[in-house]
Image 1 (cartoon, each protein chain N blue to C red):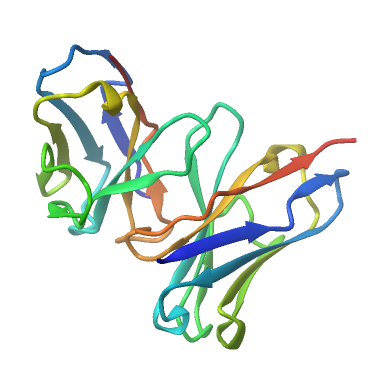
Image 2: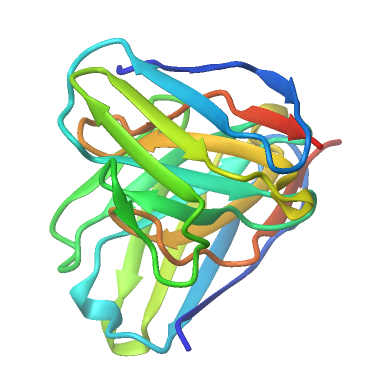
Length: 106
Length: 115
């Protein structure tokens, strides 16, 4: 099973700040790495798919990149509405797995 | 617009069974693989099961293998999760989502396993 380890677990940030969340995989699985945002009592929302592909309707301040076993989600110019928990997820190798989550407090 | 609506959650005793449903609309359901995920109270997301578009291939997390069965009815644009031998640790909100990137999620249905 591929273990996805996110860092940090928690981060207190201020508006307009640039934030980078890292997702490190225990082994290579390709580029099927996706990022989600989840706010309390809501379903997860897809932000980035297949490592770096943007999603229609998602603000352009969210971007993703990665290679090998290291992936990052960057939020450029944080806004108050970005307070949430962020998860990475790999669907390249069964069993599919999620990172433990990164909570951003603004 | 694209939508997934889960139903069937509830309170069940340990050892009991429950069948969850997920109704899809706004897209061609039969073209897409589908997945179930769950989230225990206060915890992170866990992938549970996955089914191919034609129902020929199914995959499960080890935590549910042999107890849960994923299925679909493309004519009804519906996804199902039959859950047997339920345990307290199966208590969670269960979500269906369109695979592989989980770009569309349902609102979730709550399953509580307790005596």
